Length: 297
Image (tube, rainbow, N blue to C red; front, side, top):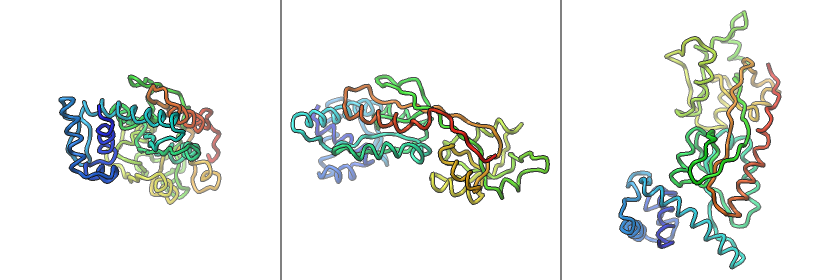
């Protein structure tokens, strides 16, 4: 298949529209449309849903996976022949808590690589595999230990979560006997797919309350700030909570923990750059391997 057509397919999926793809490729929208149409004629399948944003069909997912592999291998071949690596963004899906804690070490490592860049997709670790399956990314941080077909998996370790709140909020919902009114205490949630807190709360109450006061904060920084000012109680990873527990801005509500095992799944591909990325991810996650002692209760 024509490499420029395959690159155009990726541009449409990455940028979300034919017009944005045209800008990134420095060609006209008409040329983008013609290239995609040529691919669809060649395969006999519709490859892209003409939606906003544009998304791949089932056939488009298969071709996108092949296109990303081709792009990476072509760049590394050029590097061997010409001594210079073509600019190829490495697409990775990572959950927000990892990005806010240990994953920045990967960014620091990537800054040392010649002409490599990262394209991060922030996605809940329970749902990130869909991006790997459809070819949007070449690696994901996920909860799933069973590898996707054509992929390898490496264990990263455990991210431990604990229930925390501001001292004011905790005092307001703690009875004289020390019991906490979990059913009525305001809570924080990162987003609609954030099921971790619901799963944690089930272990604390007899019946799940129907009308809970929940604030949804889809930002790691904003989520942490909301917990500090007492907007609601939150499940925070040890890596993020420790300094605030030490300072007294947050307190632990009890000794219950939620452990989330994380894995790195990536394409099974002989690629030095992908190997570098995988090594950087595993190295960056070293803090996850041993649960850390947390004070504050």
